[in-house]
Length: 340
Image (cartoon, rainbow, N blue to C red; front, side, top):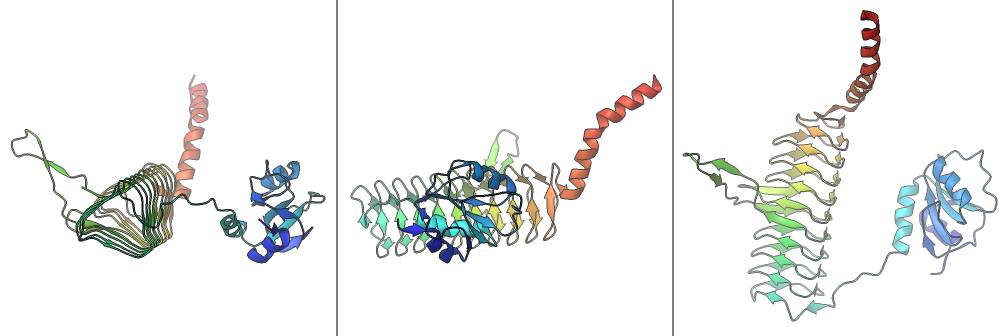
């Protein structure tokens, strides 16, 4: 690939400690890196693992204290933020994309009213409905469904099995991974007056996915009941996430796997939501809030706060409660001995 420790250091703005001519042809984890593979170190544990491996070059954070470790002939590239530095390096070794050729595969069903932009790649067995607009440079893999009057912005990638419902809108530079569903009916039922069955609440809203959003495999964003479900610019959603009807998610949020957002939840900008979190309807999450994994959110969370637990509360309070609960068996045992 023609990469050396010097060229990598220039790319990420690193200070070199060691050889500037070390050859790099790939990346790997610290404990299994080969001599020509680059790794990255964010703490002392990774540093010790790398010391035992054959790896010759590592990106390391300036704040990692390795004063008591002798790395011998290994080369270190010192940076302020090793995670962001590694993100730049990984682009150098990105795997080749498996995408259709430019044009529309002969097996597709494209309505004649649809508008297809320039340099679009559409794979086999794709269905595109009436009045759909597809922006320039999009990649649409096999078995994708795009309903009537939907729009897909330029440079967006739709992986196999994606379904975009009618009247829904996906922005530019988005990535929707396999089997994502945009615009399914929201979950709404009411008992019939005679109590004999459940009456379905038809949803007449849509979904708006803004630019630079990524949505992981097998996730679903339901259409609004009578307005839009919105996912803000730059937000990243993991696999197996459920976004209910009329939810509004701000910009640059990160939502981990198996999270469920009930109807009409409002989430501000730059929020982080841990895996397996459940949020009840109509909750408001302020910008910059952080929610720990497997939390059950039943109350509004102010901006910038960290919450955890079931029911979720401020993280420090929850950790104190968990600590107290762990002490209960010992306390009960002491009380029982005293009373005996």
